[in-house]
Length: 608
Image (cartoon, rainbow, N blue to C red; front, top):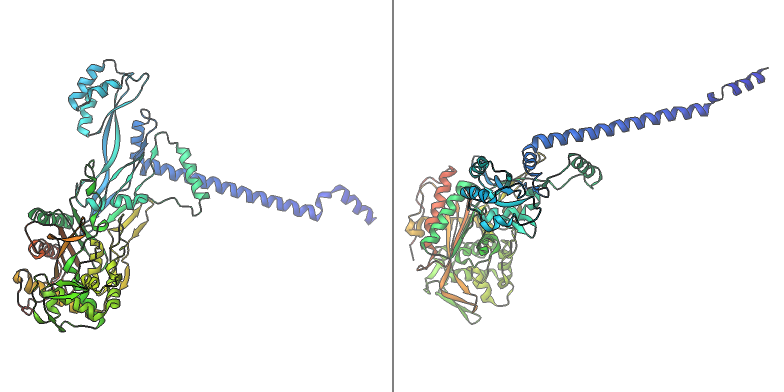
């Protein structure tokens, strides 16, 4: 009986078997998972649509409004967009250095203009038009579009609009604009076409091209297409990120920059020099506060003289002359082979490898201590220090200052100095390096080396960008980068004190001394090489001036140079005033605290 009931139950309710029940439960569970995944995907795409709509309407609203103004007239065009560059003043306020400026493009539809003569006469009263070019626009059969003029101002656009001419159109467009004109032109660079590509060609515009270049918007760009492009990039790229776009905030302080440019140009004009350059840097962080070169240019204008476009402060090398002497003595102090009181017998000249090396005036001073080598700028003294160190040790220190290598500054085209004399087999080549001849180095290389004296012996990487502000809201702050420790503190203190005494007592007979602030400085006068004959000119010089202040707690290091000043021999005559003017300006402008109490320092003899 029981067996019959069991057989009947199995035949009547086959779905109630254990295996069928488990299979049905799993199917329901999988359906729920699939439904949840589908709902999640729909929600995800919906969020992308909402975010994209917000981006287009709010963040990019103005840009797309401008695109709408022109899309039915010139369908192939794209809307130009680019990140901004800002100076930053001493209080942290941003000042526009490179931005976008709205202008107008004047176009016509020849098919809609009934009387072309009247149209030309009316437009020509507002802006000067090329008559032949204007009428040529009507000779193109079936042409619906022609450009007449670009870079029109708002006022010009308003006048043309008031004419109410049928077939004449004004299109809003944005261009790259540099509000400060020539200010910091070699730092900023400029934009130009290379083939069909419009991008940064010099300066920061080139170096940070990938960040400043923003995606252009096509005139018929589809909202849905952009959404799915963004979605595809998010889902299928390796890291889910596009090339990041943003703005640059510089270390350049605009007031300091303008003041430095004025002082530099004043010296160049006064002494009819061919060119010149100057840098002011924070030796503790590597931040370039000002960087000037002359001749300069206006990045907003068409460039007529391409020879002035490269930045000579990073792309040219010079023999810097006697400003290198403090580096030689500091190395000797650090190596322990001499002290400020070590003496040598200065005979005014010496012969090495059948070549005679002279002091600048060919005079000997007899037995003098090392500090006189800086006071009186004695070539024989630095040769003495080099010989005491030995070639290998001397080479190690000079290369340790970073001479002969790139600094890594964030500007394009940087080259490294020419220091082959440090690999020579001739002792005379090392001797000339010791007083700044026989090697050619970039100004940025030079000021980085000098910073090691001002900051306690550290080699630091210079930079002109302080912060990158990305469009996605992320900020990247450039941090100081110490590249090496070159000198010990005792050597730094010894050479600093000697250079302070130069300003207090030697330079201008002591007229530049400040009671409450110490300034350390050294002048340099180097002969210029005749490239034709490979010898030095007898009457052409490069003048240079190196300083840092306040010397006991340096906040700024400065370098200024001019090339081939006329009717003057020594840099103490040409660059003392502008360099010391800048030092006093920086102390006052930044309200730096005094570093001494006004007590007079030791007086030394004043020699020419």
